[in-house]
Image (tube, rainbow, N blue to C red; front, side, top):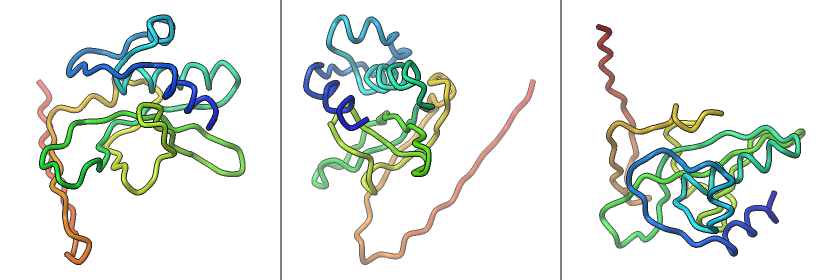
Length: 139
């Protein structure tokens, strides 16, 4: 999985696409370029083709601490027997760590689409709390 992660990272050019569904894996590989969600779908499809379960993850990546704004980010998790779910970020060529903040994960990328969100970095010395507010309206 690490080799696949590095292959996508090294051979594909990152482009910014702020909206739209992920491109199919074949288009991303043929063009050798895409956004983070395109690279995650490519990684998922290759994993599945060799019999490894994979899911799409949407969230944030800490990135540059001096930057105030954070953009939504996508990566992939694969299920490795004996090790469980492990995350890979082909956009950055990284194994997912504590600098990735997942919001949603699904076998179907469209199910992880964010409606609205933001992140506010905190200092490690501060107490961190979390809360969730939800409103569901069914017409």
